[in-house]
Image: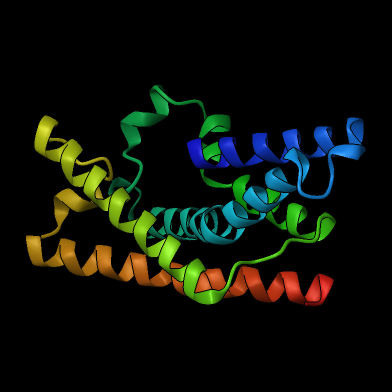
Length: 175
């Protein structure tokens, strides 16, 4: 949710800058913000956001205790659960539909996504190391080998989602 908040905040800032300061366009702050927005959408927001929605609801449908234990219903309101795990994808699709984006080269895009995935997994393991609690309950149900396979599969799943975002953008806006 943090990533999506930062991304959509950047979208807002980019639009406001372009609207109120059009002369700052080429080569200036507005251009930098646009490039940053496009890179974050391509490399992080779309593949990670899509992965969150798809993986959360698939695991929830299979066994909610793996991702969102029942006791959380008393702590986290239903609207907030949907804000974190549902609304992301429609908002990303609307963003792709209304704004053309320039994706980085595939090599740079996949490298950035891989770096993010590695850092995120390190954070997940660090939290467990410090607190003894898994950020995602499913990790507590898996053996160490199962955890490794699950996290590798999760990371690899985001690569086709990167390509999907690129393809949707190309279909909507051309190259």
